[in-house]
Image (cartoon, rainbow, N blue to C red; front, side, top):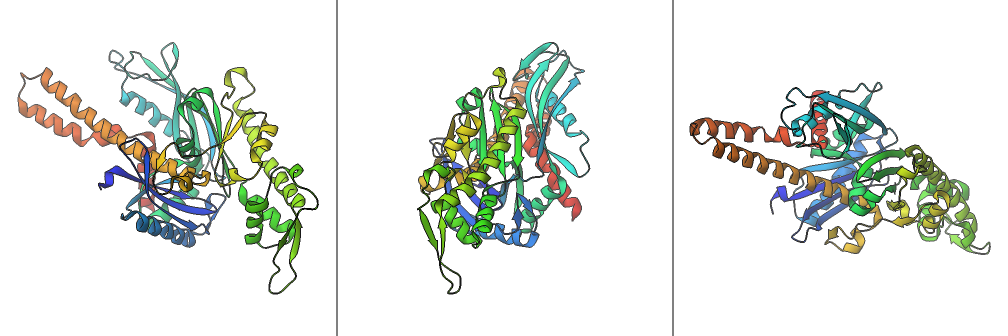
Length: 450
């Protein structure tokens, strides 16, 4: 199997690190070839706080993925999240000197590069520059300006920003684990690739990914990313509160949450009791399920209230910005019992749990489509899309050169031969998406620090 046909996603989370190998099969489904998982020890709320332990966890997950797929993993596309992530809206424009020619990809890239030069707060770096809507001269609300005539090209952008130190630490861990960094993408955008469909993105939808350390939010409307946020609370906060309030160890608290936990206290009776084994010969501890559900309800409500604040910040209460498709919840925390009705009660919106089963094939579809793997699958999808993007643009360059040759066949062949080689040698720089450009820039930063 050719390596250009596959992509490897690396989800460096607070609770777990997952390496997933996949390719697109003849049915346009993502075929999962292998998966590796390890306990994440050196990451807290999406931020690396122990380089050595994180490197070991990455190696463990990658080795397991190599064993299950039978492939040697060389490069990965990594998801990035954490409490240091923030986003902002920005408008910018360029004045085209060659306005007699139509707008092309160079003009779009020039505009995106200009936004990348924005001055951020000390220690911050731009991660993504996501175009939303364009304006050509006086014509607004343009989704695709390429091929149009115009002098002034303007666009609204969604800009995602993060702490350069936190981003660099993830890159260093990946590199120290013996891997090349193929690219980075914001985790809620990756999760959206796995669990959302085109109709939901067009109607308006909020993706809520409840992970171990953070809850990631991505809002789409009219097939455009409108708002992103990272809430610094997740499933681990719930576990920590159960552990503290019930005076038990973390492993027991997590087990209680998963097996007996509920986000709706009204479902449990005061007489429902679960018995926890005592430590080192001590007496067993009895815990009321009513009390357990009250603890969970309190913490989950805090997370959902923060989600509600972000929805209001986006402007969901405005009729034009209304999210018709409601909320799609994914991530490991979305499997909590009675979370869906509680979310509907707090937000007043329709809610469904997001699974990836419509996109994937292989390795036990039911297990892999579990919401906790949504980010990993989304990273694989993103990696495959980026590779297809390169191939498409390369083919386009060759076709353009052939057309020029046919058009000017009276000229000497040698001049076009040189032009062909010159163009194809530069296709990579022309065809790169803003994800790849930022990854190249980030790789350069890593090299400079060595």
